[in-house]
Amino acid sequence: MANAASDNLALPFRVEGQNVNGRVVRLNGVVDEILAAHDYPEAINVLLGEALVLVSMLGTMLKFDGRFILQLNGKGPVSTLMADYASGGGLRGFAQFNREQVSEALSSGTTGIGLLGENGHMAFTVDQGADMERYQGIVPLEGTTLAQAALEYFRRSEQIGTCLKLVAAPLFLSGGQCEWRAGGIVLQQVADEGGADTDMPEIVEFGAEIEDDDWNRLSILLDTAQADELLDPALLPQDLAFRLFHEDGVRVFDTRPLHFECPCSGERVRNMLLSLPQQDQQEMREEDKIDVRCEFCNAQYAYLPADVFGDDLN
Image (cartoon, rainbow, N blue to C red; front, side):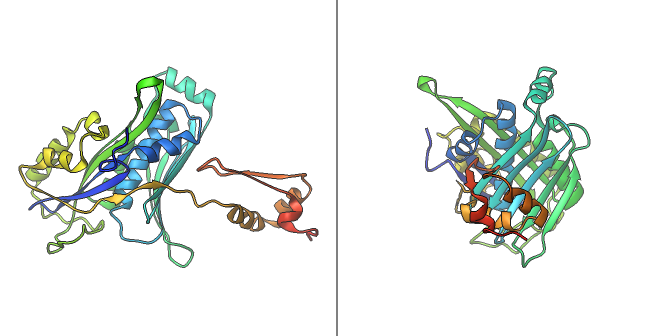
């Protein structure tokens, strides 16, 4: 069962005296709602659940107005996987894959980001709207898990000392019901900001103020976090942070609520159709009906061509 005090949120914290910030993320109803809109194999649900945790971790570290997007692309059984965080706490995500190829890959022992095949890549994008320049970082997909790929991204692209754990799994309830849960924890080294008291600083350029021995010790402590602790609704996120890092001291900050949100609408889809090239519009004009499906939430939209393009299309 969901626990309002420990689910669908990101908890910021700081390890005292170490210039290290962290997040504990817990998703219950959010990830369950997103996955319930689709009929994905369990392995895809795990990967997308972990991706939603990852964008929640990193998106809540940014001070911005817009969207923070994680996209994985490859030429394997899974061609695309996307998780999207809006600055107000909204989450959405989807995957594109060949179901038969996924089944064959799983039978041969391929899991995790291996389902995207060789020569895949990971991209993080900060989109603050049409009037602002997009920021995007892209690195090759390396490792066997999404967590390993994310760590490689920070090593190559951001040069921010980072350690993290991600987990997503189905929770089987009494009566045969299944509820998906996802969670994770991250630590990042940050430059000394002079001790801000009221809020966590956003992601900043890496500053090596922390001794290597201390960072290694904190990384080892984080690695002791168990999957059931990251998912357990009875264990408050702050209690998990205290268990792991109580020897140094932990300062927790206000939680950031997270929720499912897809901004698609009939009007948005209509405007998208009107922005298509003229040749595409002409082809649609000759159809009896135009059907559009939102990849994120699976909502279906149907239009008569004349209602979109008018009676004449030159």
